[in-house]
Length: 319
Image 1 (tube, helix red, strand yellow):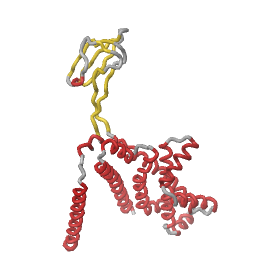
Image 2: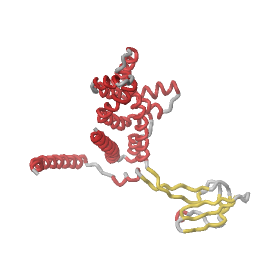
Image 3: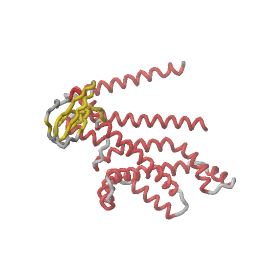
Image 4: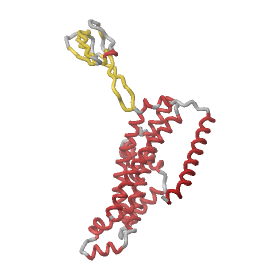
């Protein structure tokens, strides 16, 4: 109770700061006199598509049978070939006995489809997921190489880490696509995943290295005194302890990878960012689309952050 009484002034201060920020944002929005068109945004998440049902031959409408919202149209070709087409009742555009020609529209079928924003989000998620797996494997191997006693292995790992961390991701994506992609005839998706994996792997390697070196040397010495070899000591003793220590920075790196994946749009991969740019070119709803995209990225990263927080608590209980 005493702690609650001490914190309430700070809670009020936080609310006041947020209100001031909201008021400042509202004032800035009113000042630019922008015409907001939020009503145009929902269709880019989910929309009702109409697929035209066309006849593939010259023929005649033999029968039309309606059953509620669905109508079946039986078409007969000049060669007595029959074709049954199902359409939505209210979209029927022919009548019984009518002569039709190849390419004529019989009616339409409506169905819900994911809009470009959802398709772009899906592309972002699977690109990030695959890149994260490769980055984790590459980072783990490179991290182990960084602490290797072999000079050549350690040197190669150091060169890789320093080169990747010392150059911008955007440049790496361009090099992967325009150089490696051209030489080895790789698709843009492969180039994008490769560039993201190499970039994140270098940072994961340093996280793994730091986590392993943070484990007291006595742990390894105790394992070897029990008869374990170096491989068993690393896999069964050192790495499990290091994982608990590196989980927060490791998860932070993978969350950053989701945001960094927006850069693959420069090589024409239709991720969430590129989908947003394409929508803006046709609607000119610049602020609405970018704000929605920012919120979508925020939701994804927030969910992942909560999952990692849950894992941290589970590891703390297991200790």
